Length: 371
Image (tube, rainbow, N blue to C red; front, side, top):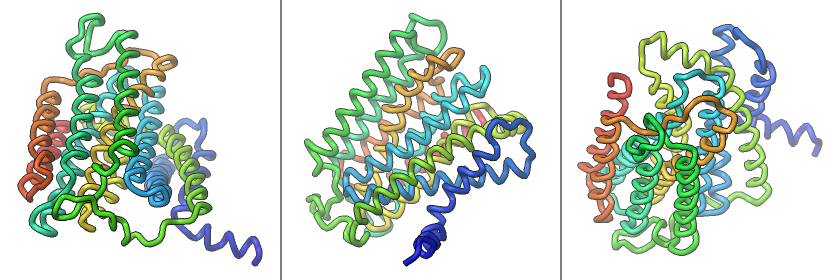
């Protein structure tokens, strides 16, 4: 078998071809100013394709390592894309980008805890009237989300060491350290200490050891390594292409008269769309616990990894880092956590709970556009 005959079927797969095309677009657009509109549209398509390909390869690696490690791999991959987009836009942006990290992280929390979780609970309830999941695992994850969100996004509004809704340097360092510590503790509990809490469950609430059988046999180690390499290539393409299209995104939002916070919502929707599809697929297979692992795990990773990364990036990013939420967003966050607690604690949910969370997500998007 020749090298050409091996490469042809490999390159015919869109998950391989798209990251390579996105890298080519990155090379051609690097350092250029005043990129024509049609070129920006092509780069944006490459960016979206690279995000989809990145999450696909993360899913391949996730299938290789199994649950709950798989959900963890996917959540971390999505968060790396999110951090890369935020840092890229903040470096190139002006004063309006000082709150971009807050807007994106909060958008990710609301979309995951209400949009993804609500859709999956609704699908699970439609499938067999009541969606069943592990209350211990989902409750622990939601409590972690609430703790990280309060430390990273609420407290900066009430501290007095620095004027405005932001932390002082010492407070930011403390928030970054505690975010990493809480995230590390959650990962230890999820993957080692109480792994059974995060596995899909049967109707009787016992861990379902057959979960994941419908995926087929796990990929080989070689396939997983290839996917890992392509994941890294896709991440590089995402960062570079985002840098190329960021001026157009920001000018488009301003021209439409929309609040700057909409940029954060767009970033969150972009990076979470593939993960949403993965969570919905799990819910359709009656693995609601896997869907909640993806939803809450992404929210935890988004705060627990983004805040420390942005805190480190402030070394070379000029201007203050605005983290404190406004009153409207704090109300939405509090309502999300309260409703979420009543949803997950019984370990069973109906269409009502799923619908309520979807309404909260819709309210967040509407108020982001029309504050």
